[in-house]
Image (tube, rainbow over all chains, first blue to last red; front, side, top):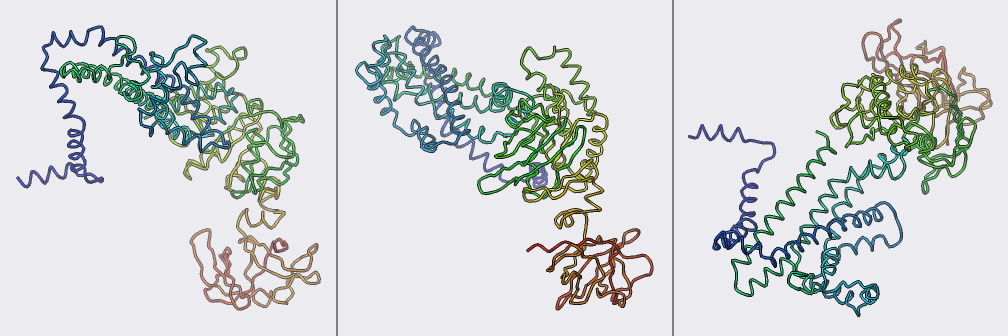
Length: 283
Length: 349
């Protein structure tokens, strides 16, 4: 017995000790914080019969809410990817007065209570607000429409793209661009064929984080959305409404669908990122 | 292509990287820029490449001012110390980069690009690696790929910044011989930066010795080695025994005793006598005022070295010279030293 365990110990011996305890804590912690609540969610959903479940999640109102949530989150993440990258480029590549202040401003959507952000954006884009008043003559309504949701999601997602891409771009070897220039590449060729592929994994991570944050966003959106069923009602809000009606199983059914869809999307993004990292890293 | 640098100045904040450097490089030459770190050699190379622009002065290609042309327009091949290969591209695509980056109307057809890249990969003997990624290659292989990539654009001049600096000693030696052979096969005007004198002396047609943003001496490897023009070159290139002397009334003196060496052209004051370790003879103490005691004899076979304490005031100055095979010398013996060949320069400061 003791001989067998000694052999076992030897086999798992590593120069980096502490695998047992760190792995144990990791699994315990993940169970407490993530897995058990999620399991409870799915367990609650099983109170429903399969027919009932399908009926709930394929009802027009639920489908519209899910479509709105995922569609706008993807769109907001895409916009953040483009403008976030431009911002990163400006603050890492150039030095100009006020750069530090600009850099600090980017974190504000992280720290600001989402309700405050929602109310501020709503007032700003309302028809009598500063920006809304300018857009109204053009026939563009932002507050209380899906466009308003989109604006809120862009706002909260921006720092995720900037903060993930920034360190990678800062570390990017200047010589790569110099060598591209000596080989006759134009600026555009150097950026598109050398810089972008190198920071691509970081861009994907930023996109995934901004997307995940947007899907789960509740606080800022409900103020600006107007919350019209089938038009500007996001899935998280619909879940809250079902909870308030004491239809817990319905709420968990919608939540399960969101969860599975998010998981699949994030898994695909993660896989893409691995694949591109492998290409960049070689091996 | 002839390259001419005329009175180039470059400063980085308070640091003067180049303080008025002029240099001519003939077409087809292989020139080494040699100097310690901070001597401005890399800055000079980057100015030729168009990666850095001088505050004053000109760079001329074949007599025409190229100072305002960007790196992109100069058609130079540049090889970095750390290769700067594109990690996300295969070896083949790395070499093809410059060909594919051309504007559409100048671009070769795909077939011609393939032929050319394959020919270059043959030239650097790495065709079998064309589908690999840079991270799968060794340092020496990476540097050869970087060179093939630079040659793909048929550069008018090839610039190499410490090309072998990141490689281990054995690969370094192989690669520098290989570079020398390549240059004979493909005589592109080439300039390479190094802080390794062996590398410069072995590979280059001409060596430019730099220190503190200035050129100290330009010459063939034989010239800079056998006939150093300045105190710095003397100390930097090859090994030298340095004996501090005083020049007074056009005579060299060692502790106020006259030394039989030629100091014509030198002003009165402190000076240094430079002697190669193999140019110092051990003689009888009566023949010379340079008196010394043999401390130690090291080494076997062809190269034997003697550590000799030169009696210099209160303290001894320990020198290392080549020990003669015959007559045999003994540790502890009191001897005299006599340089067979030497150079004298005024002592700095």
